[in-house]
Length: 286
Image (cartoon, rainbow, N blue to C red; front, top):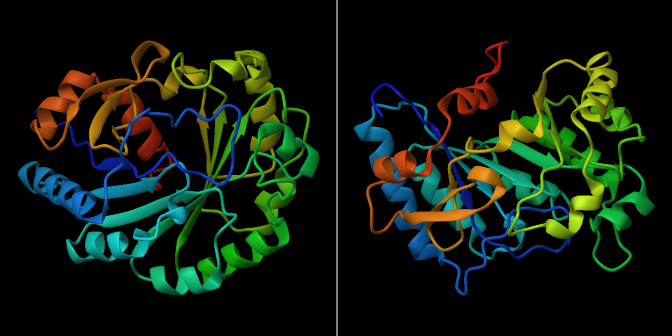
């Protein structure tokens, strides 16, 4: 582990979500999820890991499920901030408000949103909906631009599948000054989203989609399906460090019971793809 600076830890706080995306692979199948007190202990563990490894700008990324459904989210963000750790968050955007942005100002460095389509019927097919209600894109754009005014960095993730590969998402990318756009090839995890296998695309299809976006937009991170494997440090909603080798989620061990360095080593995290994701060639780390 010497000289390997794994400086970004993903907390998947919950599997609960107001959407039901067909190809979501944030499925961990725990009977119970951690409460606020337990998550603050997890923050302490990560803080100690950063200090031991002399990582000065360590970051905790808050994900789900949908983290904004949690009643204790703002308290957890406050605690992360109190420890001097950088915080970021990824959300489907449906519950974002200006009031939330005000609470997070100076505490959340990067606000990430997951948007796969601008078309209501496509979002319904994906499962990005509550009932018949899908994302209010005009409201999202307004809130994101407000966050930009508050000096937050903005990121957008788009998963590319057969459901949206023929669509044009550039109007969103042009309406908001995103610091980073991440395009992800849909990935099937054997114990999570097998039913979405019919939505897989070929590497060539993904490459062609990416080329159209790159012509129009800078600051693009490209994440083909193979780059997702063994490249995220994931803590699941029960405090387990997750390995996703060979298209399966496996629980490597609990961060409350084993040393975090040892768990990262056991999980076989690929440092090269980790660095590729978090420090792209342009050096704009986000």
